[in-house]
Length: 194
Image 1 (cartoon, rainbow, N blue to C red):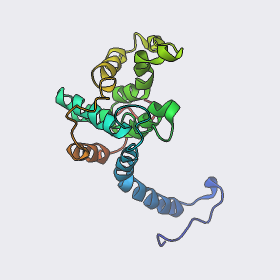
Image 2: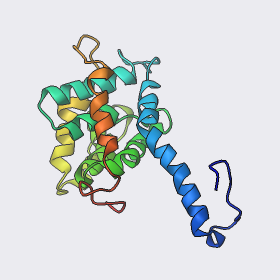
Image 3: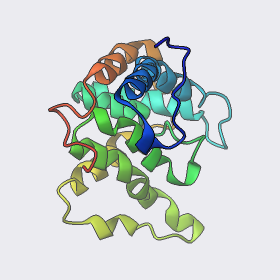
Image 4: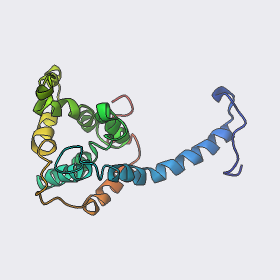
C-alpha cells in the first residue's frame, strides 16, 4: 500500500491487518514530530504576560532553570520546563493536559506531580479569590505529596521574577529531545493506568 492510500473500512472492527499497518506508519510520523510540537506549544506561551511581570514562556524557562540549578535529574528539569505547557489550550486544567503529554515518557511519580501541581500551586493564591488554599490537603498522605509541595515551593511559585538569570530554551532542548526519545511506556514508567 502507498502511504497516500486510505483504509477502506468505516468501522474499526472491519479493518484488516494491512490497513492497521498503514495507519501505524502514519502514527509513527506523528511520534517523530512530537517533540517539535511540544516545543512549539511551549514557545506559544510567549507574549501575553496575563498581568504577571513575565510571560508564561519565561516562567517555564525560569522554573526549569531553578530546578536544574538545584541539581535535579534531567526528567525533573524537563517536567519543570513543561509543567504549564497546557496553559493556552486548557487554562483551568492545564496540569492534566501537561501530565497527559508527559505520561508515556516520565515515571508514574513524576506524572502524578505534574497532574496535581496546579492544586498544590493554589496554596499560594487561591485564598485571595475566595478559594480554598488548602485544597491540596485532600492528598496529604500520598507518597508524592511532599515532593509536589516542594516542586511548587522551590521552583514554580518562585519563578515570576523578571530579574532572575533565566537560561534560554537551548539549554533545555537536548534534555527534552532525550526524554521524548524514550520508548513510550517503557521500563521507566508504569504505563497508561499510572
